[in-house]
Amino acid sequence: MSMQYKRRYGVYSAWNYGKEIEDLNRASDEGWQLVRGGCFSSKFVKNPDVRYRYQLDYGKIEDMGRYIETFREQGWEYVNSIFNGWHYFRKLYDPSRPAEEYEIFTDRESLQEMNRRWARLALVIAASVGVLALIWTVWMLWRPSLPVLIQLLMFASESAILLYGSRIMYSPDGKRSRRGDGVLLAAFLAVIILGCTASITLRMTRPATVTSQQTDSIEEPVVDSRWADFTVRYPDFYYLDLEMEAEEPMTFSVLSESGEVVYTETGTSFHRDGIRLRLPRGEYCFSISCTTGFRVACGLH
Amino acid sequence: MKKSEPLSESTFYILLCLARGDNHGYGIMQMTAKLTGGEVTIGSGTMYGATDNMMKKGWIRETVSGGAGMERRRLYHLTDAGREALRAETARLRRMLENAEEA
Image (cartoon, rainbow over all chains, first blue to last red):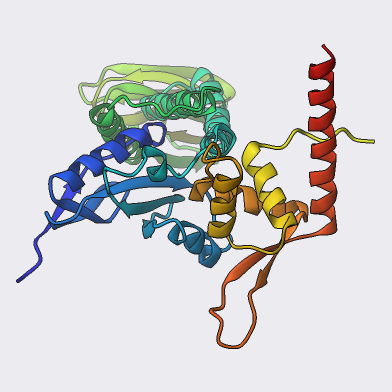
């Protein structure tokens, strides 16, 4: 007889591992036995002849042999571990045995210790991501732009959700949360992935024009000489670094495709970085007008 | 002298069982259940965590059961530091009990 397998996709938040255990037990009662637990997908085999009770443990195990033996001694079969530190165990279920035989933590201290192992790590990550969120906030105040804003929101929400999770896992009652927020968590992960993709795409499609021109002397005046076409693919703040020098006042402008002046500066000596321009999408170019030798260097990003 | 933290019930009973001789996790669990009339049970996660902590503190260490023809098993052995921890905790519990009885 061939074995019948199925895969179940879904995520559980770490602070909801009690819900995952309940779901595994229910699946077992329905004849689906977990053979491999995972972060995003779990594998089950059909076997209606047995019933198991599952348990999850979290932590970095130094001595796997001793670990598995300690569980096996009390009838626990080691199923597998996942890379992020969760370990799956199961025990054949006999409803006539006392319920405590199907618990792996039999005192509050050890259950709390396990919960806090996770909470500590989550707190460290939340703090690191929180620092990134702070740096991005400063960046956003300094030179606001869409990709920076999206990254800031992602860092802030990641930090917030980890903080929320570690609060639950630190809670002194030591009880596992039993609410199901799998859909919410999946949505959150989707938003994170989407946000990552969006911010990378937005960053990569920004114009990155760096160009310069220099002439010691000119024979006749230059009027509206255009160069360096660039494309703005989405409306946002863009930043211009401009440096120009000439004996007589010269004019530097940024023009839109319809010839509209979006920025202009006239002078004999000028240097400023990070000039903020609010540009709608479209084609643009630089333009200069001058009567003497000049030097101009500019970049737009 | 640094005041020691009260031990968890599981930790206390593991030390107590090992004071009677080297034993493995399952033996400790059974002896504890017997000593306490089933009041205290030590699950596998609790057992692993407690023994891990105590090994780090140097209260117990691992040994292997020897003897020809015998099944080789991991055993835990109580060290002098572990014996001292058990003695200190027993003294603390005794003082608490005496105080309670005086009251």
